View 1 (cartoon, rainbow, N blue to C red):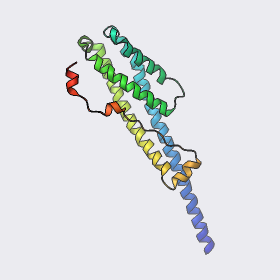
View 2: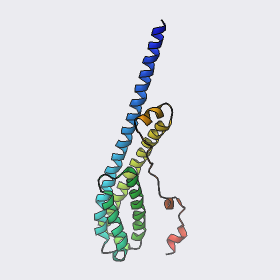
View 3: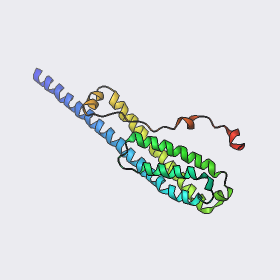
View 4: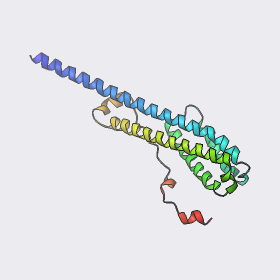
Length: 187
């Protein structure tokens, strides 16, 4: 009778270990899937940037440094083999540059009235919304994985599997600050 109890406990322990291991693998794969979704959405955005730059060059001749920055960031992000942290950093820089670009566009009423530019801007806004949704899914997956890496007993398996915590997508500090609406109207 005692051997059956010990054997039963061993079986339960093995099943629990397999369950924890498989759960960690599933969480890791979910993060990779979410990261791939972000990559797809970012590629869509990056493919739109040259069209945007070309459509505004004539209007924004003296804003050329901003257009060059957008193009340079796009080129950097498209390099293969970037780490997740580097992608996140470049994405933050690109978001900041896009924000400055959108503010600069306000100074060109003819550009804002251009049908091609309006369509391009809608497409970019749609891509930004998709990127935002992909970031939320990524952050949820990363949080789930990070929790599993830190919590007992899965933390024991995570260290043996060499799983590391992943960085969340967040917004740059300057975008967290309140907007000075008065400054927007008094340039």
